[in-house]
Length: 471
Image 1 (cartoon, helix red, strand yellow):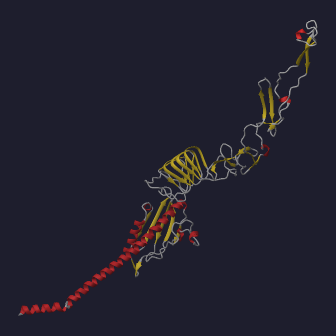
Image 2 (cartoon, one colour):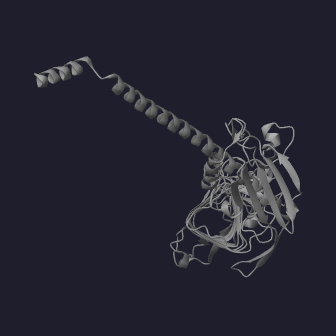
Image 3 (cartoon, helix red, strand yellow):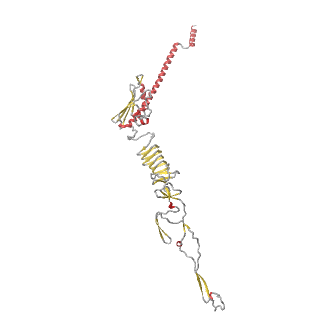
């Protein structure tokens, strides 16, 4: 019965739920777990606040390092509060500050839970510029924090670029204060000022990486690269580029060898070897191997300033700058000097006018000229500028006829008197040989004329062109 009674009691307990002690234990465990989760969440949030502060600290101290390098050994000791002194004051609309953007306009510490505006003290001693920065003490409920600043320092060190680690350090103290330091020796430092005030003392090894966002490249020696692109101008002694060269303008005192050359401005080089060279402005090249594409479009006859420059007209025809005017190379286009005469297949271009004296006439060179003829005679001619002569049609005169003769003679008519001894009783001559005497009668003969006295064509075969004179 007892077993059965215990069994029944157990069944009743199961049916009625957990006992009060069991429920109490469960609530305690749940509270502990909830509290642990809440604290873990708060810790995670706090860590995020400190890491965000660490990122800002790294960004600020990197800006201080760049500013310090740019100042070099001439930096003036001073104390700076806040962050605006590292901003471009005119660009950010600030009443005071510098003119170089080391920090963006919106950079601040005041929007963070921890931190606040820093104070940077700059000193300069024995050529070493030091910038020591401190941030306001980090406290919670009046108690200095130690673990949080440690998170901040770790994040700042992680966020600082490897290059800047050589001049920047971070620390925190037991009072919850963040510290950052920049130290740079202008004489021995490995960084160059961004303003270009210091030259490099060795080679720049990019380790296979590219130089990007470059404006103007000025090289006193040779340039060797896979490809070269700059938004500004390029100047070098010589260049060997396996790929393409793209620049606003390019100037080489030596030779350039490249796959293609594309310059939106001018190009000057001793020689260029390229598959294609595209120049939008002036190209001064002693020797070119490859194709040259000229995109500078001008008008034939228009004024130009750089003698020898090349351009094209609207049809793509090549033009050259000759004595202040764009002309077709080799003549036939715009001329060299005022007064020059040139022939055009159509009307006269800009800067030219019709040479009216040449209407219907051929041009002949001035000076003295001699010519010999088959009869041994020799004639001298003298032509002076502006002389005129010749005629399109000519009527021959007797003096211009060649010496000649006509085959004719006086006509002779035989006559005689009859000889009675030979022919008695006859009143007629039977033959002149029978006459008592005989002879010939002579009379003038007139030869008839022919021809119509019309002028003959005196012109050589011709084709008409427009003779124009440079204004």
